[in-house]
Amino acid sequence: MNESAENIRSILATDCGSTTTKAILIEKRDDEYHLIVRGEAPTTVEAPVEDVTAGVINAITEVEELAGRKLLDNGVILKPQTGDDGVDIYISTSSAGGGLQMMVAGVVRNLTGESAERAALGAGAIVMDVIASNDKRLPHEKIERIRHLRPDMLLLSGGIDGGTTSHVVELAEIIAAARPQPRLGIAYELPLIYAGNIDAQELIRERLDDVMSLEIVDNLRPVLEREELMPTRYKIQEQFLEHVMAHAPGYKKLIEWTDAPIMPTPGAVGEIIQTVSSQQNIQVIGVDIGGATTDVFSVFKNKDSEPIFNRTVSANLGMSYSVSNVLAEAGIENILRWVPFEIQLGDLRNRVKNKMIRPTTIPQTLQELVLEQAIAREALRLAFEQHKQLAVELRGVQQQRTIAEAFDQAESGQTLVNMLSLDMIVGSGGVLSHAPRRQQSMLMMIDAFQPEGITHLAVDSIFMMPQLGVLAQVNAEAATQVFERDCLIHLGTCISPVGVSKDGDPCLTIEIVYEGRDNIVEEIPYGELRMYPLGIGETVTVKLQPSRKFDLGTGHGNSVERKVSGGVVGIVIDTRGRPLEIPTDSDHRVEQLAKWQNALDSYPV
Image (cartoon, rainbow, N blue to C red; front, side, top):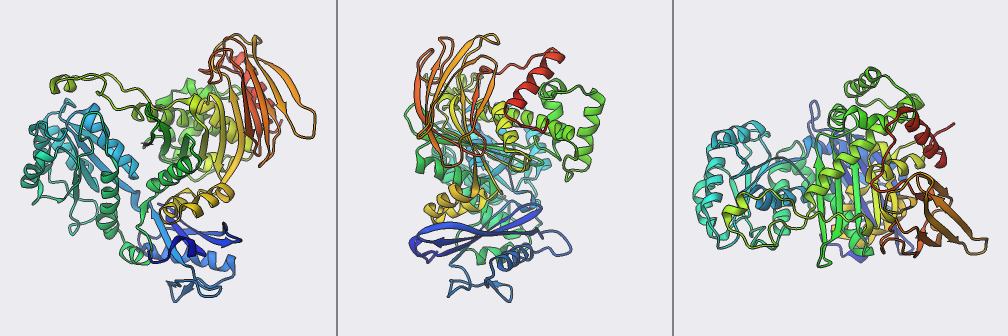
């Protein structure tokens, strides 16, 4: 990119999704970047058009009309900006054609296999399967699996530098025997990235050079105690551009237009989450709940206070195409526990099946809306559980072990996810971004993630995070300014003491210190939700005294004083306990849910 960051006056960014291509125009006004307009058009990777740039031009044309300025000349983006015409840079992300689908292979499932999975997920891939020497599948079963899945790319890792080479070479021989055929036609040479023991590089070349497009990078687990994921992640994104994107219809042209490499959409969302975390020095969880998948992103500090980024994809948890899977995985009882009215099980199953058959429909009645949001809570909860299992401190570093012991390893690493140290949760996806009342979004996230202590909550208003993620690579300042001002809708702050007691028992005393008006002092018993209005951009000091059974992050019974910021909902106090228990008795459950929802004015009465 030729333009230096401070000279950029205008930025055009697109996100080519599987169904919709979204375009945004960002301009610098009074030394600050602002979102000006947004347009969208159907994505055009399938017949009859089969050229992604047609959808891009259509979306930009809408932006052109809304902004009242010329951005295109005979189907070409005008660059750089001259006068009021054109833009200084154009950038894009893409998940069209199903995104980037990968298989990863590692010697030990819980060690290098898991590190390889984290590298691929962090680069924006969907991991279709993880093959490992100790995964109890026979060689012919692994070969059959690779042939059946037909990934876009493979990642092979295994062995620490200087360690044994035999196991990772065996995996290479299995991949060579499988000779996987690409999804994207015979001209496409399937890329394989090797990120394992450097002593095995020549042996890997001998077995795979003639079979696939082989790329070799530094070992992602050079020693047992350390992961080096970034070289692998960058190589995955580079190969995604050179191989996968280059064979999708129209992408060669799109690649020529852009001023920065096209990123997989989820990888770009991960970038903006990491940028905000580092610029504000906060620990963050982001979630994007879609029709077919739910992505969870997090940045938490490890025991050495280093920020660690993780992303997981729950490829079978979504609100339309995958809604039946949510029902199957969560169980009907777990969905019903969020429903404040009686409903026949057959009726619930039929409604879920209808949503799967007609994925683009939206709820038409209040009852349908409540049911959809009950399902969303379980999809979010299950995706977060899966995330916690992968976002772990490195496994196998506490004690010295032989490779034989590592093969037998079944114990889990310690999760990095510490809810008491979490500063912010950002929600995205239709069910959260487009809920009729913002209280509904806030309550869904509180119920699903069960934040502890003091946590700020926000939603992405119009799903701009992918474009801002790729922009962060070019101009981090512009990306964070637009993210804060135009992308996020701040919901407010949730205060949740950790502990369990009986309904009505003492739990928390709160004093809200306002400037220019009377303070509020209240004792809140266990089992309640309370809402206190506090607008966007407003801050107050809260003085919190939990009872001796409860902890707000400084120990049981210890007081906390903190400045908190508001939002469209305000401050929500949640004394329902952690872990949150919903009454199992049907009448009691309906009564409690109705009380909690009324406390937040979630639904019309």
